[in-house]
Length: 198
Image 1 (cartoon, rainbow, N blue to C red):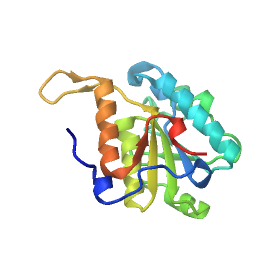
Image 2: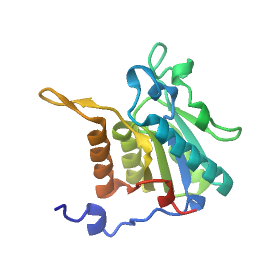
Image 3: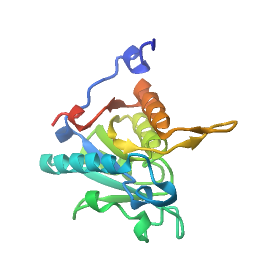
């Protein structure tokens, strides 16, 4: 039986702030993850939840920031090529900023922190890919910068990983462990979009 989380022990919030009082951060919702070598298990259902969150945020007047990862020409993260572009179902609209990053954390060497401060928000809703890398790194950095991040689990996805010593760890296990690690202290994790109040 699991004991209390660090969030419980430190009496940190366990319920997300309303979407209307937060900023929505769409992390690496790129074609990179829809097909090819980096295709993620469950990516299409997750993108549908991302699209639902995006529509709710637009209706609520919530600040929205799109993040895209650029690893250069010829990689699955080449933002100049179709493979690296943001997926059409969550494409940015005019006026919605897009931040290009080169590290797992969306805060590293970008102006994300400055933009969020200009919006006057401290609560963030995170969605996107991959759960164990860029979502995880961004949530941890947000926490360390004094923000209150929430992660919508069904709006994230990841892939199977090689185990140390041989074999592989199924994507579902990687997903569950990544979310559990965030839940312990760094973020509020809710199962689906309905967990984030309007």
